[in-house]
Image 1 (tube, rainbow, N blue to C red):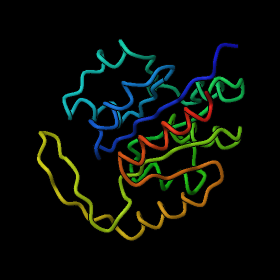
Image 2 (spheres, rainbow, N blue to C red):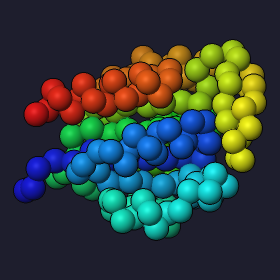
Image 3 (cartoon, one colour):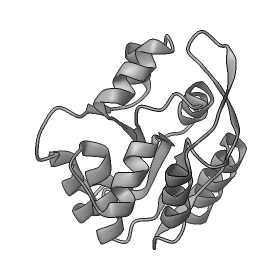
Image 4 (cartoon, rainbow, N blue to C red):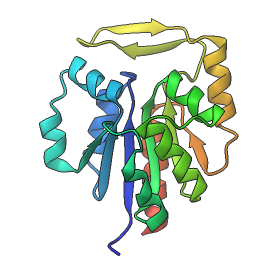
Length: 179
């Protein structure tokens, strides 16, 4: 087996997606997974998927059984990162629903005791984010979304981060611990 890799998933959240992708593109030995909404959001933010494909393998949510999740059982991945993650994806993960590529990846990572690092879009009652086109806007997550994020913080093998800087530090520290 080759050296284990990092699996990174992007869902349909645009919350600091450009900064997440900028950091992601600095990493080596990464496979990118896109939910259907994630692919749409990248386009909305003007991010060319062909540029990303030139840097790493990209898997899209196009099958019912999500065959790539089998990589976790083979020790192919050492870490799973989900950034940014929508409130919908976080809620499904908290409820144990794995009906999409990304939620299935999270479930299988946990079942295989592979650490996950998650950057939810809903981490505080008031959040500044960037809309497509670059305009800064305020959003106000619902109580139910904040509760789901808090519940996810309690999951085994899961680290929830609150901002891009914390994401970068947490992923970097994880990679250093494996070196």
